[in-house]
Image (cartoon, rainbow, N blue to C red):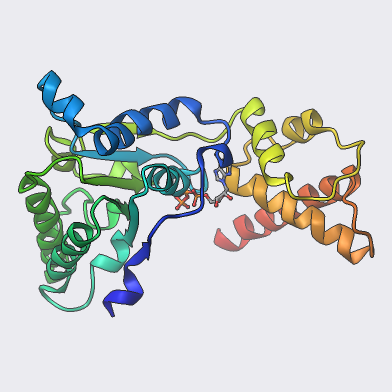
Length: 270
Ligand code: ATP
């Protein structure tokens, strides 16, 4: 079971150059995660402790996982990922045990970046109903906090959590010594989208006429993941047309298609 739910990558392939439009966020991640891993003595000499945990929050598909992977890559750290939703499982005590195993794994693979996605699944505000399920979730979160509190050898293991539901979080996890550095990762603005289009078309065989500024302009509200989907879909349009070169029209068609799909989803959801 454990091997399935915990994802371990010795050194992920994502680099800082693969991330577009969130320079400030990247800078903060470097300062709080990369610096302590690369230069722990610096913090000791200055006499301060690096932030214990970093919390990335923002809409889906904005690059939170990428940031965590890229910093692991840059520091030659092992990337260990676990989703909060997978930590809260059916059996009493299992969640807390998984958390212990997770930190054990991180210690074995030092230096490591421990990435806990969907942290809201174990750290949501307490509800009034005291069902056993809630109690189990509570225990899992207490175990996580106690693992973090028990951290002596700072630096060698860095913890990054992520959520799309910042509003739902129990404020207890944001206290000093816990996830005490918050980084908001928003959807890209128009310049960010242009950069992300350039990143995801790097390996594509593009027609010279491609207008990146127009692509960025027309895709308002798109996340980084949406931009990537547009690029892939544009390539599919070229393939359907039996061409190897991707044209502006393919991107326009791709965007139409993706928007239509989103609308369908919205309708089926209501
Ligand atoms: P979720 O909250 O849904 O887990 P996330 O914020 O962790 O989302 P990622 O998994 O990092 O998002 O992004 C999904 C994919 O979208 C990435 O693999 C990448 O291809 C693309 N992407 C997202 N944001 C960016 C970005 N800022 N620059 C380049 N590509 C991006």
